[in-house]
Image 1 (cartoon, one colour):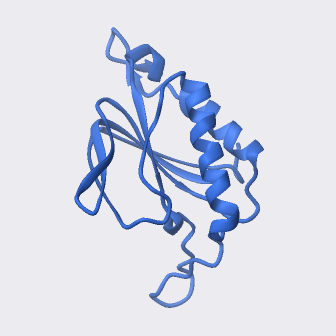
Image 2 (cartoon, helix red, strand yellow; image 1 turned 90 degrees about the horizontal axis):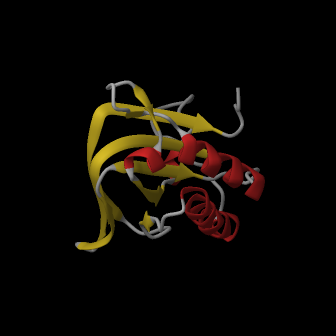
Image 3 (spheres, helix red, strand yellow; image 1 turned 60 degrees about the vertical axis):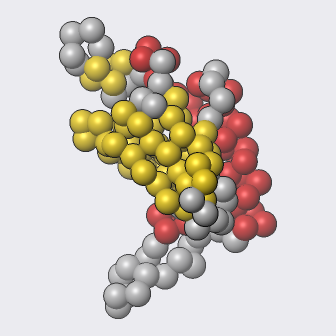
Length: 150
């Protein structure tokens, strides 16, 4: 699994003009799933996201996590995170998982994040054409791939 995490002061996702999910301060998490990904990957990522200390503490240092600041999470599926761009100028998405594998794992990841954060998540809709509107706070943007857990 591959995620891009953006610390936000607010974020929302719209489908056909209607808001599907919205949060104030917290993380907007774009998640891409490939065939090799498993529930263990989802659990590891959810725990990492919940404890990621990138919010300012009382001294202005990036030392606080979501719980410390009362932050929420917006999760948006994004298969394009697995784009291969080595050849030519048209990306290949062959590494992105097919829906029969990706949808259940995406749903499991959302549940794992809810379990780890103790908060209900806001989400988009898997496979839908979505508009994501956010204010990146910092800016702070972090990329994590479960295939590279160093």
